[in-house]
Image 1 (cartoon, rainbow, N blue to C red):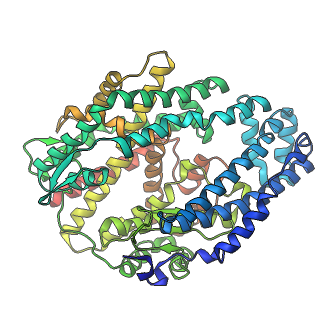
Image 2 (tube, rainbow, N blue to C red):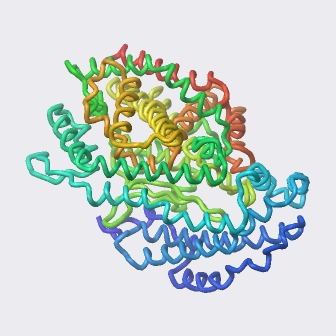
Image 3 (tube, rainbow, N blue to C red):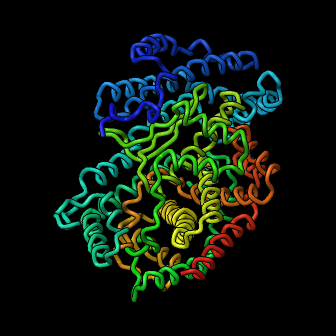
Length: 589
């Protein structure tokens, strides 16, 4: 479908950011001249001067973000249009300039006496910046001199080479072979691999699995060196700044205590018997003599899709999310009616789905909607992100509006869980009910168990390298294989090729990111249950979380909403949900 064939009501309204490209160009020319903060250098020693600097930086940053938002949205409407790709690149160069211009500020502030910072944190004049200042105070021992920080800032680009190299290998130079599928020979791709893994033919699933990993096996040595390079980058930053470990560095940057991570890993490992039982049930449901790793993605229930038009899907979501109250309902309708959403797939449009929120603008959501259950849940998911941004931006000053990545997947997953539970409660179709139970169990398997497995792989790989043990294809593959066996148990046949799955996980190049998916779904299930059980009081607390931005640390915000990640009971509650779904599924199959 061409973009001009889509009705206006299903296309996002970029005019809310800039009326035209010409207006964008005018703003770009003006702001280009305003990125100059040198007059503030050496003056950040009084509360009044610091406030003036913060306000000036914010003013420029807000205008830069508007420029970025417009170029980003227009580029994603059709990635083939070089004009918008160029506009995007031009904005990014301004951000780079802005970073260089303001690089003096954090070292200058952190160099001040602790008593001064402590006083400023409590000063009403700087109340919009108290959390920001408290983080600078906490980072004081890790922040270097201005000169050293400028040098470190320049290492960012060259030390991303491992990530860039992986992207080139994985997306452009991986020599994937041809496969016969649906009666014709076609070149295998990452997307087609996922499609075939979900097909009914086990022999075809096995074939695609073998072919796919044979391509990775040919370059596994190079991929091991590339990943080791990424780990060495982390160790470099850890050593230069003086953190105890790479994991501690990553947790500190998110303002998350190590005990949260350790609770997650301990509780997930303790729940391994439940996962092993699920593997036995899955094997039985698929009627397989042997269940292999390439059988984990085939649906247990066939032909139970929610084949809904977009309008029908949105109405379903409005009903499913009704426990969140009238205000949330009104904003969901407002988002659709006022064209926050770009709905349909068109030629050249960015694939996938996302939400983007910029302070001072309403959020935008990209979809590529198809009539599937997955796409229905995707609408709920992305609108969860959108309204999280909406509430944080509405209720916080710019300096506290951007929530931490640690909580980024919570609101979206709360929406998915509420919608799922609504459907389970209201459907009379037993086949659909089985499908939904399977959907929920696989959501927990892939987001809680699998991502924690990934996190343990990262942790062990970094520990090995930090202790001086070089990483190579053999020790990385052996470690991954043993983790896979431990997580999935004996009901699964652990095909040897799975040992190199680590080599294709792009998230490993954003170290210690994946555990946040696991804590995110843990939090979301607990919050959704509290909303369903306690009603208005729980909704009010949840809205405090949605409105919290980065006004305090993310774990404290989640605790307000009803998910205390410092307590093992929080993780165990999700395991009970998983087991209850498994009990019900086993009862009705």
